Length: 193
Image (cartoon, rainbow, N blue to C red):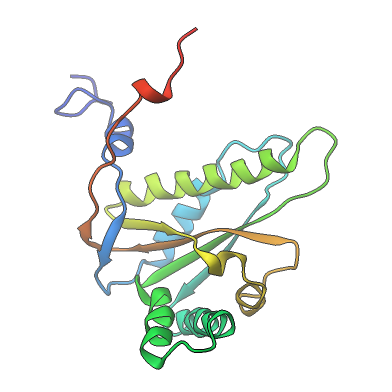
């Protein structure tokens, strides 16, 4: 067996990708600063046509997650004025699902050769790099969006620019429980020419 192979005969990077699943429950153990810096370094190695670096990262830990939770509850109250305290509290708790939360946003630029969609896809690739790097360190990950990703008050609370678009709320931490693996249905999604 080569040094790049594992027991299954697959390269460890391929094994990580094939076993990727979302973390459902996280332990309270925070991600270290060194781990976060490594994950963000992996993220920015994503393909980036035009070298525009369209990604932005906002890291929330500890009590700073409460800012986001309060903004999420306020956004729900604005959308549904009759929402009761229990529903608002449940909405606010979404920011507390993990000990570390990285809000990944995109800032696209007008460019003659790089359309906005390519810039957004680059940010998605950055998130995937971050994810695989996190799992390689034994961390759990969950990528969430929802209506809060598009809410101007939430974006303002996070200090995002008006032209910044949230691509994902990336939860990080020690996994307690993980979701099921997605079925690898390539046949119905692949055209061979």
